[in-house]
Structure formats: structure tokens, C-alpha cells
Length: 263
Image 1 (cartoon, rainbow, N blue to C red):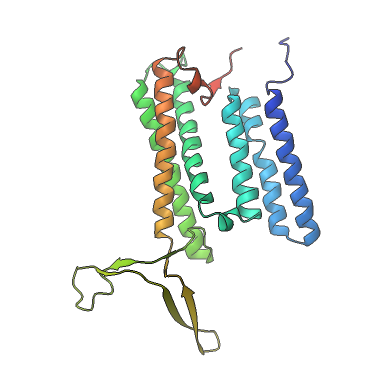
Image 2 (cartoon, rainbow, N blue to C red):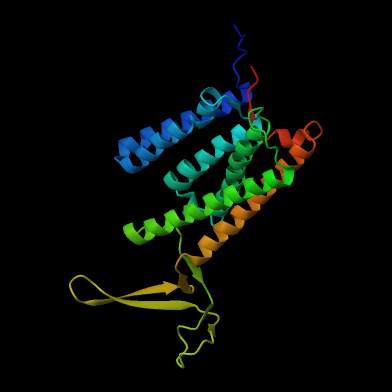
């Protein structure tokens, strides 16, 4: 029988895992006492997502490097608990941008590992070149990023959410406001206030004043998310390319490359 060391998880990983679980459970208890059951659900979901590295290790027989596993755990905690429950998305302007960059990196890791593991399998007779594996990883990550933006748009459209995160902007350029109805955009700069008139359910008219500029309806957020996803995916694809090109010589890349266990 194979002897199992202090586990296939190192002490550092165990410590991070335990600390994050304790924090999530503590936050869950606080929200339960406050009657905020939506946040309680988010905490339960986070605890379930924390099991992803364990599932990958035990069920799929794929070894996650310590660095990559730590990034995954911290990403889940940052997105679900800090972002949603603690509202870091609203408190810190670039929180969403940081997480989308990491998401692009992690999704590229998934795409890369799938192809790389097949590439090294004796049952898979076609061996793909490093540049092609990197390209597949990049395209996989970008596809996931696009599908997520579809999801955000659908939630905002159907359920009146704001997952795309509208932003205040100080300038607009649009042909829609061209009084001559020609394809020539009208540019308005230095917008400092927008007044919105709307009809209430009782038939009366109300107004909402947006100080600081004009309300951009999710477009800038969506494009920014895709751009930083591109950056994260590109960085990982480059790391993966160098890893395959010189497996024994790129120790740094090994910190981010999942590998099938050897028996």
C-alpha cells in the first residue's frame, strides 16, 4: 500500500484552507443571527467551492501545485465573501477588475491542463506543439469570459440585476443624439449632472438626479472585464508555452501547471 505523507497537501495549504473556512463560518454565523439568509447562502456556497481542489486531487487524480491551489482558494474567498457578502465590489473600484484578471488566468490553467495532460498521455497519439497548446488555453479562457458576460447581461435584463456594474462617466459620443439623424457622433464632454424623468406606478412623474456625470449602462464594465480576462489568459498561456518548451528548465512555470498523478 502506498504510504501517504502528511497529506498530499502541504502545511501551508492546510493552514490557508483552515483559516479561510473559519472566516467563512464566522461570517455565516453573524449573517444568520442578523437574518440575512442571502449572505448565509453565499457562505455555504463558498464552503462547497472550497472543496474543488480536493475533488480535483482525489477524484480526477490531478495534482495542483501549491501556488495554484492557494490562488484558487483566495480567488473563491475574494469573489464570494469579500466581493459579494462584504461588498468589496462597491467599496473598492478595481476589485472586480482584479478578480476578472485572475479568472482569465485560472480559466487558461484549466484549458491548458486538459490539453497538456492529453498531450502526455500514451493513448493520445497526436502530440500538439507548445504554441498550439498555449493558443487553446488562451481561447478556452476567453470563451469562458465571454459566456460569463452573457450570463451577467442575461441576469441584468431578465431579473433587473446590476452584475455588469453601471459606471458614472463624464463624456459620451453617440449618433443617437444627432438631431440631423446622420451617422456622425455628437460628443458631449465635461458632463457633471444627469436628470432622469420617469413615470411611477401611480402615474406620477418623478425625477432622479445623477451627480458627477452620465450613467453608462454596463458597456465599459463588460469591455474592461474582457480586456483584463485577455491579459490573465495571455500571461498564463505564455507561462504554459515556456513550461512545455522546456519542461525541466522552467521551475517557475511548474508552480502553476496541474499534472496528472503518477502511480
